[in-house]
Image 1 (cartoon, one colour):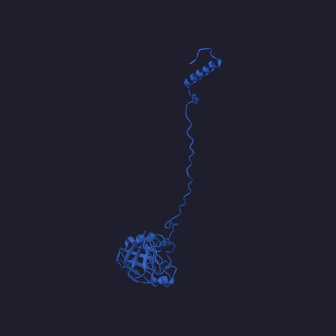
Image 2: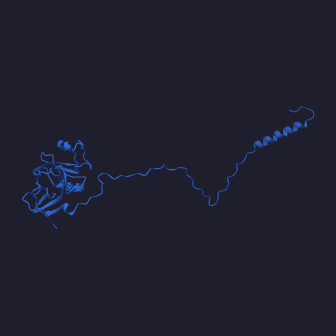
Length: 232
């Protein structure tokens, strides 16, 4: 409120500045307009900064049962042959000197397999029967084998690395078996401690044919069975 008298110039200047400031403060401001997008108004794709973690290459090692296939000599391959015998169908004949196993089919024929037999001093002969059958059998070396080879395991679970292979047929009350092998290159040789071995493929085939109770004839080294002629 002004009193009577002369108004000073300084007061007028200060009053004008205050009024001008109030007007400016009351005036709304406008935001800066964004720059126009270039034709055709497409935004560039976002740049991802994500990088997938490095993955070490996977090394696949072959399984024990995927070894390089071994091809048997022609005479040792499984085949039907003419075989004259008086034995009944289902009988197994082990021709030790020729390293053949015959499964009698009847009507003058047999299925012939190549086999591995006992080393010198470990062959045997006689008549037995199949008392038990097992798939992927465990192996427990008998005491006499441990005595000769003390480094052998006392027990080994069945599987591809087991020396008894895929199947086993146990002969009477003996320690001998007809079984498979993971070493097919030993077929046709004197290799075992008396057991009869076949390739895993052949022992699986024989196992499917032989019944518990089947007669098994093991010929001595001095006697040779009829070699049998391959049927055509």
